[in-house]
Image (cartoon, rainbow, N blue to C red; front, side, top):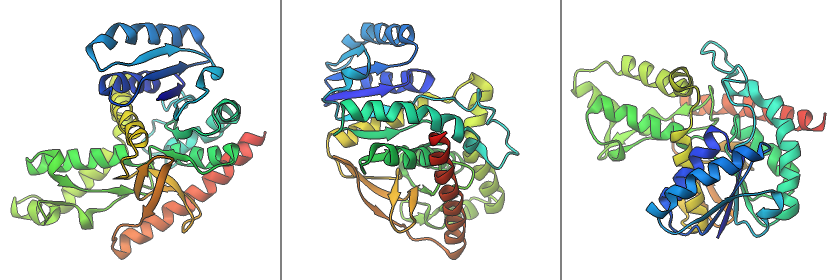
Length: 316
């Protein structure tokens, strides 16, 4: 099956590497970038590593090479560092990149749909949720989703595991809403082995409020911390993107916190989503406290306004 990646910067390259390493059901990966020399170079570099992984045909190309693609991953656009979205005190966060990247998508999405009208479109570029709304508008179909809060959820589980001294895979925790500053960490349902995380922290003599503040900030600003150290947040989201492509190609019906359009909320956001062939097949709202519901509603309002801005920017 064919997978396309449009945008071969830090995130696109990391996604391609993770796809090559995971192997599995993929047989062809096409890399596209406006800098064709970069796409050629990344493809050549990864091909030399391909013999170490399950069989995969990886090459650079143009939009015409997306014909027959099952999934197209869009990572193109201005990143947080270049776009000036690395100020922890800025409530807009990734949304500061919206208008610039909406114009990029206005060019890319019609080209993709023209040659791969049946492909599932996965948005990774920041801010992914309103850009996924824009992609639905431009593509004219519902086979669109974004990486959403999957990476935030993994960070939540990892930071809780550090405090509790357990494996991250044994922590059940979820982040919903926007992949951004309004995201909602569901502390009320976070648990390990059926035991609430807050109970375990208290038993261990840790201040729940202090841990909560540290974890909340650690997740909301993880991208900035990474960028300050390396210049780009790429490996975690690259691995997440490859995992999501896998779920679509295998029609796994995996329940993951990715973002798709919710008719109930009238916007694209992350809930408990069932991901398989065709993209997100179902969306379910997890149990929340009144406070968490209020936070989600506030995030929904932010996302609706952002979605409107994205469409307007794409038209100019």
